[in-house]
Image 1: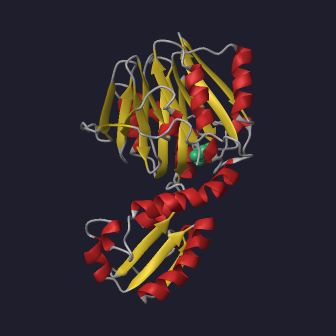
Image 2 (image 1 turned 90 degrees about the vertical axis):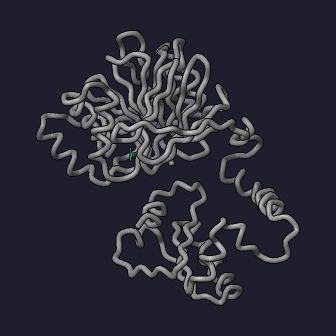
Length: 361
Ligand code: GLU
């Protein structure tokens, strides 16, 4: 799970981008980078180390800019190194990306044939060149981003800035999370609210297939076909230090020690009920539960092992046969769908790409 931060203002936003990345560190990453527009210049700084190393480097270079994108990378294609760190650039256009582009090899071949030179081993770089290629037949940057998105297969949240487009950033999502943060003198986007609480509590959650244009004064959300999309603004209640490491040595240790509290909070939500109520699982759950004769649990890693434990409990309590499958296998194999199977997907982050793809499948 990588992290994206996007900011557009009329004052320098470098410290907001870096603090946003720091708040996203809990998601794990192997390298980090930032690109900003400063007048006519597009400036990029990347580091194969921690966000603190990137910050030191930006300070050394005296980086300033009023429009920018930043990224913590969790490598899926290409080794974790500076050359593969985001943002990736194509002809004055910079892109950060969270997710996986499944058809990147085919797109890379087509773009190479069209004359584009690749400087990284990532799947992400195809997005930068693809948007640039689409600029030719598009009236503006957002149209080029929309057109490029229609060629992408896979999961993505992207942030895009362009040298010729000051005070503008485009973001789009399909599969990977993206939230907008609204403020009076600036607008923002990030992989989650934690990165933006430093500047605003006014959040707008984008849906799959949304594309948004951010300027310091406005936010315009459309669907990939250009039709307008209305998304509700919500006030975030998350405490600003919810993702702070505090006294813990690292985030895994923090999460282990948070388990008792998480269980107490969950049980508190269930009130004084003595038995499991179908209604806890949603308005239609009772009808659905009555009509199933098997359960299939899809998960990866530790969640898969949690699923194996759940299997023992569910078979003993519900007296229904339960199978547990590794989501990254299930999504690619031919299985026999059965409408009377209840599918349960488990993901700690809610973003595990293979589990989401298996669920869709
Ligand atoms: N697939 C991209 C890469 O390997 C993005 C990974 C991420 O989400 O950080 O560079």
